[in-house]
Amino acid sequence: MTVYILISVLILIACVLLTLVVLVQNSKGGGLASNFSSSNQFMGVRKTADFLEKTTWTLAIILLSLSLLSIFVIPRHKGVQNVQQSEIQGRIDENAQPVQDYQPNPAEQEK
Image 1 (tube, rainbow, N blue to C red):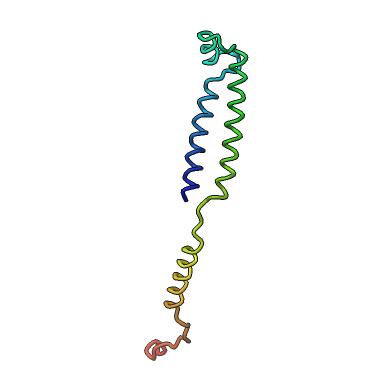
Image 2 (spheres, one colour):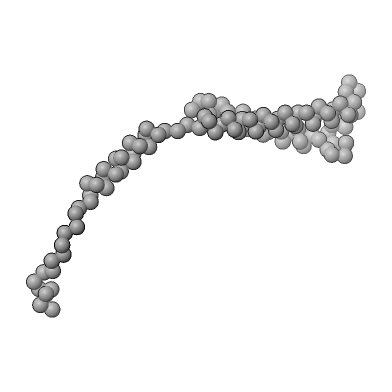
C-alpha cells in the first residue's frame, strides 16, 4: 500500500513539473525561456530551448513509466473479498427456502 501511495505522489509531482515546463516553453522562441536568457547570458536561447525540450521528454517518459508501474502495485484484497462473498452467499442460502407445492385454502376453492 505504501509503494502505491509513493508512486501516486511521484506521478502527481511529475504532472505538475511537466505542466510548468510546458508552460515555460513557447513554440515561437518567445515565452519565459527567452526572458531568462536575456537577463543571464550563461546559456543562450537555443541551449535553454534544448534543455526545456529534453526536460519535457524526460518528464513525459517518467510519467509514462510510473503510470505503468502503478498497475503492478495496486493493492488488491482478494482474501477479504472472498470472505465477504462467501458470507453473503451463506446468508442467501440460509434465507432460501425450498418451493413447496401451492395448495389453496378450502375457502378459496369454493369461490
